[in-house]
Length: 441
Image (cartoon, rainbow, N blue to C red; front, side):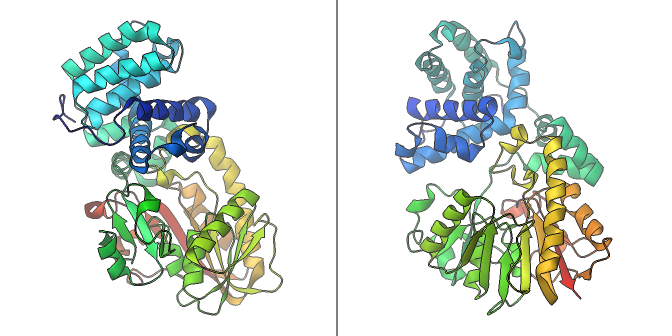
């Protein structure tokens, strides 16, 4: 990061309404503990913004969530009192939004200062305008201290997460994960058919595993093919598990934690008879809407996947288990602020119950795929070991490095798949993901 970024042309969303929306979203996440998606749905006026402005608001919020600890370190040096003593406490987000603009998004310094002062006034804290003006002018004049990407990644990672990654992977890999999480995530798509044609239409890159990728997606519903249901948003890592079933045409497959339905759509597109189970009525309704847009027929069930059972044994079960989602930080940076160690402990029990229930509903010879978008081995590898120790008629079916193009570096010694955010670095990285495959004897 340079002390003084290059001047840039104003981008969509550079006006005060976008900054006010970003401020409201940040306050919702950091003070009300809403997820980033919940906050976007909750903040008044956002739904009426032009699509490109919404995309800019999300980018601005993401930069703050990923870099707030780094910003706070610079800010603390210029204030006479600790940040936690600022009144109102939301004032810190005014500063963070200002810093994000000039230090990370190449907004001209004078524009960053002026709009930050305007934001303070618009949000009813005009009495702090002199402080905001003075601090922002000094920051833009002196710049922020250059921090190596790996050091910045470490600085912006919560202590509990850092300690877990150190235990799971060692210092070098932990540093690489943390640095990769600071990057802006590209947008990946799964398509029903003709990926080469859709790559051209969407101005996207065709990835080795068959997903498409754009560096930035803009406002998704405006893209060609959305209304027609030709594709859906799905990170390339999340698209891998369903592919590992092989040919599912005509087979009955249970997607046990199905919403919002990316893997359900993959399986249905491949000709499977899909039973999509999720405990949330709201999420099942959203899944059904997605399937309607994609013109795919699936059976939906509102039930707890840890206790629900199919009417008769099924050919395959997919568990994309609820988890801490620490592999999705690049595009869901609220995870850095909302997840805690107790979440991991609570979810581990649910993940084990899902595994046990899945084995029960499989036919002999049936296949189980378990996956999570977590980097924590306690939610992945540890469960695979645990399941094999339960005396059940199930064995691991190793994933082969040549089973799909591009996954060789992700395969563990036991034949599991472990994606890390810095894999595929040259094409924009990938979500952290874990996949294990089992067969019932």
